[in-house]
Amino acid sequence: MKITVLGAGSWGATLAVLLADNGHKVTIWEFDAKRAEDLNNRKIKPFEDGVELPKGIAVTNILESVEAAEAVLFAVPSQHMRSTCVLLKGNGISLKGKLIMSATKGVENETLLRMSEAIEDVFNGVYNDIAVLSGPSHAEEVCRKIPTVVTSASVSLETAEKCRNLFVNDYFRVYTQDDIVGVEIGAALKNVFAVASGIVDGLKYGDNTKAAIVSRGLRELVKIGVVLGGKEQTFYGLSGLGDLMVTCFSKHSRNRAVGQAVGEGISWGEAQNRLGMIAEGVKNAVSAYELGKKLNIELPIINEVYYVLFENKKPVDAVNDLMKRDAKQE
Image (cartoon, rainbow, N blue to C red):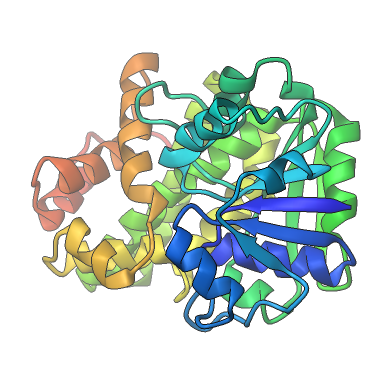
């Protein structure tokens, strides 16, 4: 199948290589023309510790590659999803009749829409053709063909299965389901708890504290996800608990790394600049905080992460305030 991957970051590049390995004709569209040229000429790797792009993958800054594709995979930062869609539509490119896949994890700050909703909001009438790919899957490991298991979700199981069939191989196993709401909310908000987990590392509190963040964070994830229409069981699966575990504990997690820097007294902006990649949990802390207010849901960990990142609250004070909350049943 002819597939265009939108975004040449670590995850987009890794999935492009996987799709090419599976025999598909893959083109990567990169917004930055100079970076696209360098990648196409193999002057740079897509990301540190990543594999080099095989010769069969073309990298371009030209949008016509999307028009010619049978399937499109979005792997752009969540807060750039809408602008990417608007750019496509503004250049006369339609997604109707194509398989639309999203590997982007996030909720828009301004609209509080999930990524599939943002795509539908721009293009109208394509929602049944959208599948989201999510689960515990660091690019640094997938590119080394380390066994990985994820899920493909869509309101249409047929669409979810089409997405699965493109990706599945002997090192990348894909399950399917129809709870696109639960999968996307789990994927987006687990990054906020990864930042919290990193803050705990930065404060050098240890495993007990981190386990509390993960388990109580999962509870917050379930509360907000179910209110938004997700199925509770989804949050105990790959895109919920599975993704939460890997991103909170892994050395590869950019969200945990940014949180650790914040816990050590470095601003999240400086930490992200040092990292050289976007940590989705920072901006999605805003979305999660606003969702809690809008839905009137008590989200203590999410709220404290927001206060630390955007209201200059000291990390140690945030942890102390969580510990001093009124005693209650679990």
